[in-house]
Image (tube, rainbow over all chains, first blue to last red; front, side, top):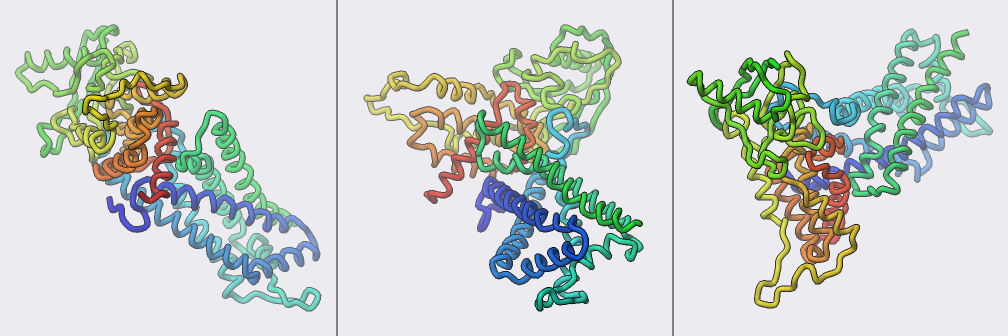
Length: 234
Length: 249
């Protein structure tokens, strides 16, 4: 195992995994709060979301945060790959019979697989909206004299009848959220353990909060495409 | 009871190895798992075949020698027991039982079910000790008052018998539970303080050097540990290592 430079030891890899993981949890909360505006209907909803999108793509502090998020994802992925490689090397000959379910939870044993699904989702999701917003053709209109891109329209179209693949897209988004949920089910509390933050008093609360987070946040995210698809059915 | 055993056979470290099937009959449910293996070996010897090599010593759950990965679990299906404490009543007549050696890069197979666990010894040698003044004015350890809770916690960590079940059961072949127990048993006591930071850094460095995997916090080690060593020890080691690293000494 190469333990040099950025990661001088196996534990430093875990600290980086925990720090980036918890940072990305914060990102999820921010992203969700912004996206919940999609539940607002009518012109007011459209304007609110588009003004928010303009703010998120232009305000300097948000720019810094978004670069931190890209870096966080990248580091989490690269670190994850390094960990998986080291772990594979640590057991070159596998057992003929394994019974992992006897002593550990499913999500804790499948973090890499779940993470890969989430990464595939992030790539697709950025192609669907982030790329379109930044480099694609998006119609613009003025709100109080300020020209805004109609990202709201792009989102509605993507999950609406105009997109022949809309149902598939909704399904994919929901499945991805299930994967994020399972990833967080283990990951949230695990990050605290990696930092050594464990005590009889607080650990049950951390674990409870992690489980609540891993259900509530992905469920809220998943409800958005489902909602947008259903309201456009009629 | 009659059983079908599928046992890993490997002539030596260089041999590729393979699973072989052995039927055993008239096994008493009161036998320990190792006694059942003795019966099988007796049968193999009588047939002029090479008996199965496996580690064992005290046969009362305190030495840490017996290993064996039984039906996908370290020390078999029992909880808080070593293989010598596992009894055949844990199985049913007609069962097929898979018996494999501990699998880890850091625990190379010597023969059949015997693996070389000296990687653990080298981790201990790297820092799992306290330096004591032996120049004639050695202070008796018992003269230093220690809070009961700390003494108990240190003792709990010290009950680790170094069997390697944590490594064997971990999906990453990580030695974190073992190393953290050995770090904790000293970190919790006043005698362990002078070398506390150096100790954790050196032991983790050696652990990495031996080729053990990383901790995913699945908690499988704690479940399979015959001595019930807690994940609290891993958290303590994570904390100590972070503190030591941040100080950059």
